[in-house]
Amino acid sequence: MVDTPGELLESMFFKNALINASWSVDSVVLVQAADERGTRFPPGFSTAFNREVLGVVTKCAQAPRASATPPSAC
Image (cartoon, rainbow, N blue to C red; front, side, top):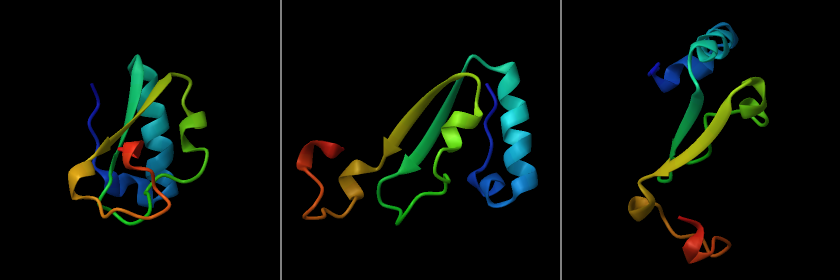
């Protein structure tokens, strides 16, 4: 398991380091808190990994409800 802080996504150099670190694991898990506005992951980021990629949404109970979001989304 390789656990990295989300701040590493803010630099292109560190994004490449994350991709390189993924070579030593079987799966990549991307975690996003539902109560954060927006996402830290750029579009298509998961396609950079040559591994199984899972997305996990946390803090669904704290997320504000939007009228366009169906209640079953979290």
